[in-house]
Image (cartoon, rainbow, N blue to C red):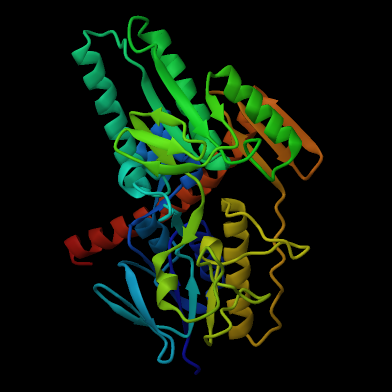
Length: 410
């Protein structure tokens, strides 16, 4: 009898989770999922977390329970993959080494703290990871509390939050924080009314490259919430509480979040395959890494293209589709079937704009905003988490039964 193939997935983000679901459902291979964290971080909900709209439990999915739910042919390992021996087909982490027949890289991306901007990394926060989002949230609230205490409950001095980058993350965070501050002031009428949100963007408009409807709705909502948009501006240097723009304007801040671009995970630096300027792996039409045998890449770590061959922005939607397609092509190789070209189609965009407000464009024909947009987005995002959470419950039940048998001797 032919030995079952082993597939190693590195990374438990949107691409890795979708790949896991696809491979596990087939029961054609043994699967090892490796991630440095024991949870799947719902990064699309980060704006709610840092604005106190939800708890940490609402933006995480337990990868241990998720893996257990699929049975004994799926294993989760908490480790950081540092090196891959492509010749001998083995992925090595800090604590373990894992041979593979097929390898799927889904380690995502990180905030691109550009080295050309002096002080950017040292004096600004990213929110692409759960620790960084929690760190910002904690420090922001501590600073706000200290200001209230020192001034007897009345914040006379300006409290400035600067967000660098007018893409989807920057816009959603700016809107949610502005809304949070508005609610905070309403509930605490004598405290901290002099808080300002600045959004620095290099282009004319926020959400550059998206359709006009979303740009207009986002701009109008940000303006209504009091966000100060500084367009046609680039950050040239950052100090502890001051930044300088390319027109020599100086802006003082208490906190700064940077969302101005991404770079692929550090794992790509150990690989000799072709990469783009964002260090993303250039994959073939089947999402294979051309240089190495049996290796695929999906999500932000790869340069993904759409139906017309156009470059796709790094979104959860493109990550999920690529994870599914890569897994399907691995299964095709296992069964000696023809692989499918990875034609990824972005069906729409959803932009959360603070409180019960969102702007949505779906399939190029459905465009809604306001409260209805918020509820549509909420149903879609909550539906994603709900299905994964239900799967995790199955894993928890299996774990409990195993422990019970161990304790009772059955």
